Amino acid sequence: MSPHRSSQFTADDVVYTSPLSAAAEDQRRDTLAMVREALDQRRSILAFQPVVQARMPKRAAFYEGLIRIIDHTGRIIPAMDFMDVVETSELGRRIDCLALEIGLQTLAVEPSIRLSINMSARSIGYPEWLATLERGLRGSPDIGERLILEITESSAMLMPDLVTVFMEEMQERGICFALDDFGAGYTAFRYLKEFYFDIVKIDGMFIRDIAAAPDNQVLVQALVSIARHFDMFTVAESVETAEDARILTEMGVDCLQGYYFGAPSTQEPWKITRLKTRATG
Image 1 (cartoon, rainbow, N blue to C red):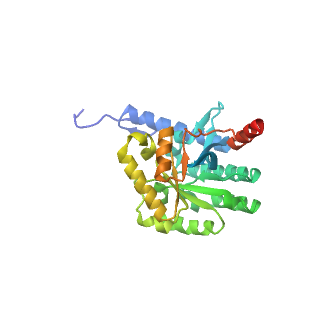
Image 2: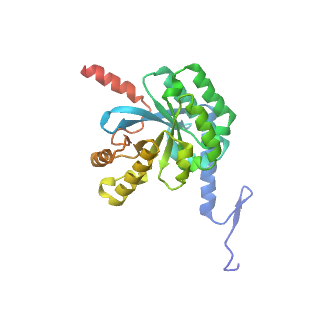
Image 3: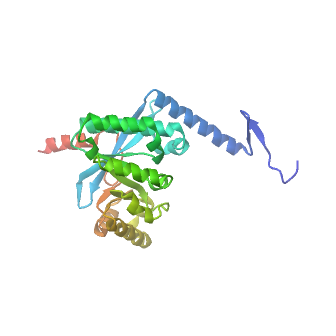
């Protein structure tokens, strides 16, 4: 064999250049099969994480509903384990539909909360996702005012014209929009005014250990100033220590989210808080 040729072998009619690439493809197929089966059987739940007011951290401004699927053994699988694989496929759209459906149902039965749900810009053109949203909004007149739709920077930039039109239509019906992973490097700042997001969530890469990172402090202060210029509410993601929370509050960040204030939980945290209040009251 020529030293300039890589060894190749086949598996299921696909040519791989190494055993590692074959193993990666097998894992991708297993993930797709697991997600498809879970969706077909509607084995899915939301995990809720509080987003607290920076200056009143015992009070949740809203909760983020994070999709989880349940495999055939009953194990709860977080989105980070499968979303990269399914994001660009129809399975990604089905996941967005189910997350939205569960979120709207939660808002309908719990009128005291606001809830954010993640979505891809790709789902705007997916008929079933739009139908799910319409059904939820018709079911209760105030749900739109308590629903926040989160779109990542990278997703929003895929189709900015479609996103801006959709946001304008939905904001007229009371829905808020959050730009997730703000500052991660995708957004052209000229789009911020056109998008007119209500909330920007500063990416956790700038937030973790910010107390010990002067460079990140400068960057976050700049992002807060940009958001304030465009009259956008700010949320710092991935807040994990009291010192980080203190510094972010001093910077003027409006809300904080992270393990320091609560991990995502499949138990509804507002019910737990209500029980604690009754017990101490």
